Image (cartoon, rainbow over all chains, first blue to last red):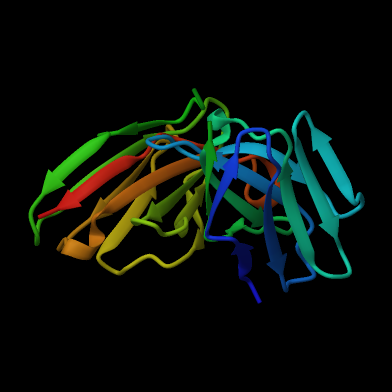
Length: 111
Length: 115
């Protein structure tokens, strides 16, 4: 019940296309859902996060869509750029509890 | 730059040996977390310290141990090393004790290679 499932494992998108990464969880106590971006040789860094009181959050080209009833959330990257090529991790947590990370999605954006 | 400093960046050692990885958290952060990332694997949570005390324990092997010192820096000790321990070890820090009480800030990792 503590798991966060993430798909796809890898994703190849053409420059200018839309990248979509999906995550699902079981624990209804989770109430904070961040996405982390990791470039090769670097540590993960917070990209965008959402709480379940909203269904969507947008920051520039990055959007999180959240479906509380389905216990699913997704990251959409609009107008994907080669510089977006990285590994993306979704995560979930509840108050005072540690983050549970998904297994990651390796995104490659072709020029 | 996340403000989290990890040393060493790279470490090559032999099976059976012991190594120590060091982490200095961001100024003001009280929590330190250790994660293991093996090739093509996700982030496996090992252990968390908050203000010097162990707060949470994940999938940490008995051969591994950690501590957080009064100045809040932390060390992860790996002993009786095996080939399978080769991985990237990340330290992260946050202001609060866990979860969404604070964003996680990750260091750049220590790459351990066991030959």
